[in-house]
Length: 310
Image 1 (spheres, rainbow, N blue to C red):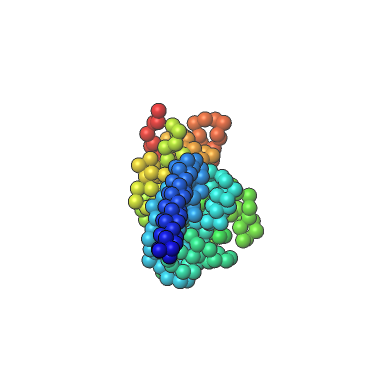
Image 2: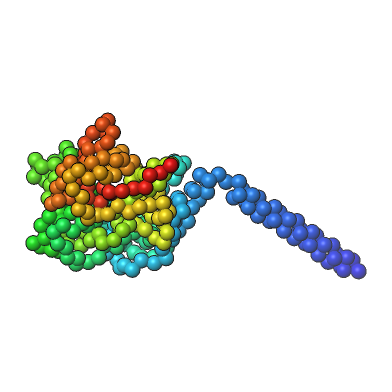
């Protein structure tokens, strides 16, 4: 009888402890849920960045890349993004890097740029091999270590043509490899498999105008997935809804005297064309506001019409 009583006592204690543990687990789960619900948008943003294949803002996840080890790619510099997240920033900076693919994975892959590190698949563009181009084509090419828009000026060797990097400022004082020509006015020899033809709206290297706070902002596009566009607005790396964007055409036949919109310190502003340099892919724009002066701007950054915003 004593043994039976002892067994019943032990069983009762076990049941009590089990119920207590379940209550504590429930409390912990509820606490975790409440903590998650009480997170600020900034804190949730930081959590998003830690999830495989995601950025610290909403953007579609790409499950797989059609690529193999050693392929040349353009990729988001996630080290800069992650540093901004760690520092608690709510706006982010990045670069569009030229790199090679180390390994392809689910939702994210590893690139090699100096060292190896992961990048969301939606932040990687595989450069097609063996592309041929002709004079006047616009490409996304490698300048230094970055993706930069360029116009083909000599295609006598179509797989390794010469190009002017129209993504560089025309009046940039830095000198090219000849030691005398500005980098924005120099014609560079591109290397095979280090550039890709830009063929459609929202391709890597294009630009668009984005509605933001009653103005049109200029965005350099890196990629577009589903209904979202990924890129930089001035220096801010972000994603926007495609429905808020108007793609800026790459090839246009605007002429001197045409009224257009063009970027001035990241905001699309009105002006008139005073000069056209078709070979080098540039328009000279005199802005309507005299304080903004006159500026030489790239094909792909100038658009004829934008709707007035209220």
